[in-house]
Amino acid sequence: QVQLRESGGGLVETGNSLTLTCVASEYSLKTSSMGWFRQGPGKERECVAAIDWNDRNTYYSDSVKGRFTIFKDKSENAGYLQMSSLSPDDTARYYCAARRIGDLTYESGDYEYWGQGTQVTVSS
Image (cartoon, rainbow, N blue to C red; front, side, top):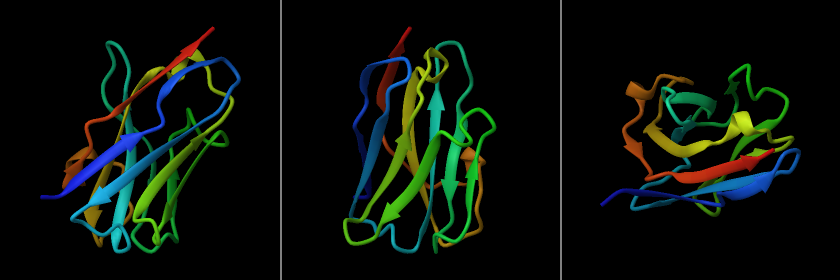
């Protein structure tokens, strides 16, 4: 059974950094596109970062560009989201998602597999 499991969330103060990890089981991220989504209180789920299957192209939402970095570690079969200069606006539950070989996409409907999410709370 394919599983994606996120970790690394927590409570941090404004300006601090966090790195989220997404580990895949029964599934290879080596040939998968991957996205990180978040859903804050009363907000719709949005894609904050995505990377294509061969790691050549990335996408970042305007709200996180320059502060977040997405990458994969094929040897660990894991994906990561490095987040810096966090603010209360970044408070949300963060989800990783994966899809088989395909173009870079930030559309949630294009992803086949999802994790359960990890909570990130940024205090002011």
